[in-house]
Length: 82
Image 1 (spheres, one colour):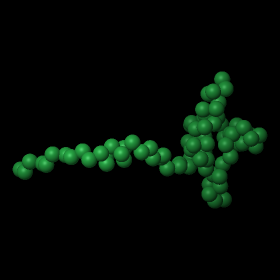
Image 2 (cartoon, one colour; image 1 turned 45 degrees about the horizontal axis):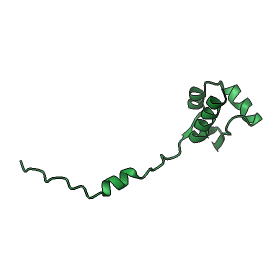
Image 3 (cartoon, one colour; image 1 turned 180 degrees about the vertical axis):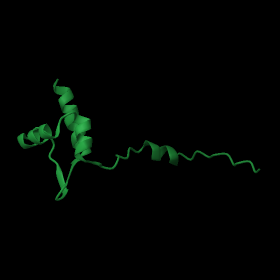
Image 4 (cartoon, rainbow, N blue to C red; image 1 turned 90 degrees about the vertical axis):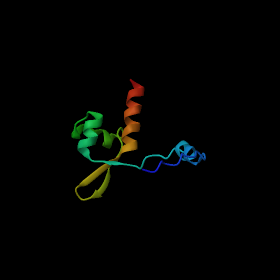
């Protein structure tokens, strides 16, 4: 077996690791939203209509999704107000 050449630290790897790349936005379906927030479907839609919960987005006639970041922000806001 050939010995592997020593790794050379040119600083490029550290620069790439130090750059914070935000994770891609995720879309959540209703069952996952229910699991995360602990509310039933009817409570989620009631709060949406009152403006107290993030609005869903429609991807089709029978496909509603929520933006994960908006759900996480709502959870943090609820935790901060208690």
